[in-house]
Length: 484
Image (cartoon, rainbow, N blue to C red):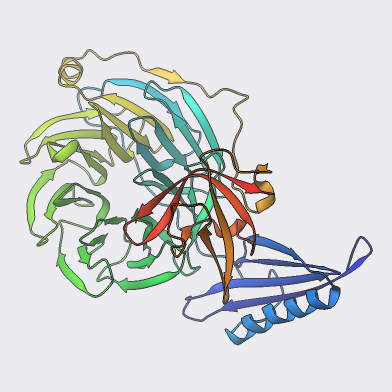
């Protein structure tokens, strides 16, 4: 194989273990002074890193060293394309017409064009992600602000303080906090992802087999547990525990994986989860949302619906509890379990939801992001038969879509750091490339959580801001630029 005038020598390796604990490839190509390494999950394009050496001999020696390291870890020569890629389960849901006598007061709706599970709403904007891999951000009045195009379907959107992440069917979790999305975590191929949560930079993943997998801020595996059930659609995390909901109920584990704290059987398998300060909420297949104490796992209240519960949420502090069922209805309960109202969504069943400032935001089986006026006056008017005419939000035809940055070359470059910006550097440590702060005023012994796809030994980058995480590392906030 030739590449210009240089002859390219390529070595392709795979590590695919019987128990599914690994399903990865590693490819090294040498062309004259250049060594190109491509690695990732079998069946995916993976990530690419290119390094140029002073001589061809040094390039060949570096390539041989990389190959030797992988072979010692169990990688073996293979033929690309013979093994199948990871298993992916797309949630199969049915949605019957609502039996509610009145329709919800929908203010506006935005049709994404594909079934959607991902939603996040904060003070500034609303996020929605669908099974085509599209993620849109909108303002609270429905104006479309930005669009991301991810490589595969979006399982869910989660927030961790300032940071927004999208978990995708390709096994990666993308950080959407800057103009260009980055792959922040890469989940093992045997994990058929159902749901995820991130707390202080630690990724918690629940899967088809009922397992919980925890990955740290450096994208390195920490611990895993197999629950009593399967189909784990709920995972929520805080400082005291990770709360894992599956077909046999909810289990709480110590954050460090040291043991199970409690297990509670719920009324039916768990299909969705929500959390507030001292409690977690489990939406179940047997027509209920149940509130559980985070300390003991005791069931404190049950909110009864008329069909299987696909999603739930609360107003701040759990004053009101909301639920979406399999029959295109949405409910509101008082915190003690009293049903206050049931209304039809008009847009299918709510697969995820979030309450914000007297509005209830839903993503539905038809792929719509729906904004419902959940104020007392609007609900009373809806129950009396008066609802507003919903505005259908249109996507601007020229709206650009930002795709993930998979190499350092995809970044904007600067010749010097702007005033107030922070410089970080990639440092080779054994087999890992870590990122450390160079700018004054920061602890240079701490690692920086940084996208692996753009790490190159010796490379320097400029970031807008750094925040110290409780786990003893820095997190980047804002855009990343390559420093020439």
